[in-house]
Length: 216
Ligand code: DX5
Ligand code: ZN
Image 1 (cartoon, rainbow, N blue to C red):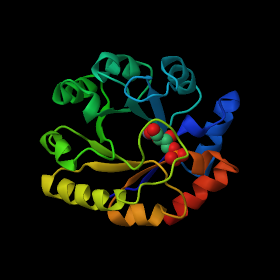
Image 2: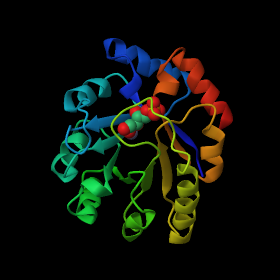
Image 3: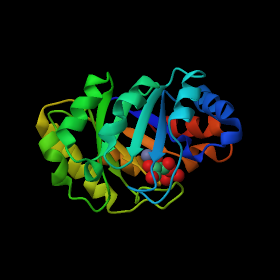
Image 4: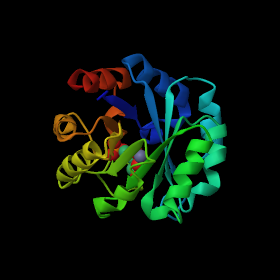
């Protein structure tokens, strides 16, 4: 399966966001991970529509929008219109997961379904006919720079097996605490889309992306 790096701009410097995005792109990144937090589903509030609208003008990277918001179906159309290419919602946050994934497709985006570290992986199974991607959180959602939860590696293996038996080509994205020291472990376990925030946007962004991609 194609391996993809999705740098999370949550860890970028918003004083010069365009510069940081272009530095990641120069290193070879093809996706950008965009963490939207509402202060309800997770305690923190990050950023929303106006940021996505603005950065859409300065890059053609694939916008991998991760909605950590309650009842996300309310905003699917708007995030699609502003330039998201993929929209991922949390199983825990949806009133109707199936309808939300349908709405994402209807809006012209790839549909992702995410679960938190403590959510049983069986919860995603009913939706494998609709999801284009599963996003496994490997930290508690809500902030960058946390430590990777070691039990995530087994969860990645189990979900990869589940995706293989589904007979569909579903991406498996892992998000939280990924850095050069555990990247290989996460890839070997079966993840093919890697989110990294602090490990990419701290120091030399272009070199960090290149270092990650060499392991791919
Ligand atoms: C956490 C976010 C992550 C975060 C990852 O709630 O979903 O995407 O930005 O940051 P790092 O790579 O620093 O753990
Ligand atoms: Zn994220």
